[in-house]
Image 1 (cartoon, one colour):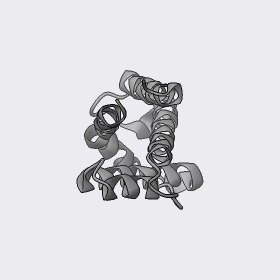
Image 2 (spheres, helix red, strand yellow; image 1 turned 30 degrees about the vertical axis):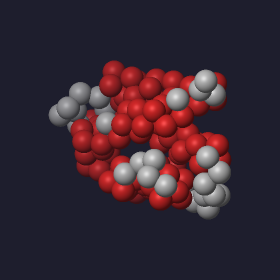
Image 3 (tube, rainbow, N blue to C red; image 1 turned 45 degrees about the vertical axis):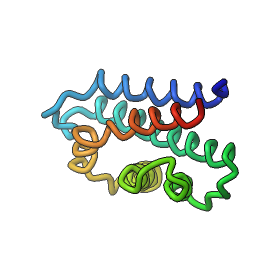
Image 4 (spheres, rainbow, N blue to C red; image 1 turned 60 degrees about the vertical axis):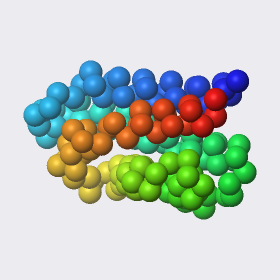
Length: 136
């Protein structure tokens, strides 16, 4: 049986992705729509945070070690073959993006945000699918 806290994190990630999907259309210039930019950035940040928490929880459940940074949870999952190196790198990049979004908002590059929205959002459902298979 899957732990309720795992399901809760997955539901939160999926809700965030749904909100992003509602607000972002390919080609939208986020520089011209502050409200869309704020909603998208908030939900992307939340999705990243919940993904980090989910990874950390799986690391704890599997007794894989203690992550020292947000990225370490993905590294530990990669080391034991739960996620691929490629997926681990993409998730680590999302964790890095989260840090910039939270701590250096003024330095946030809208072109990078747009690239994430258009190319990298699928990293979240890919990770969820693997985790659900792993813990089922």
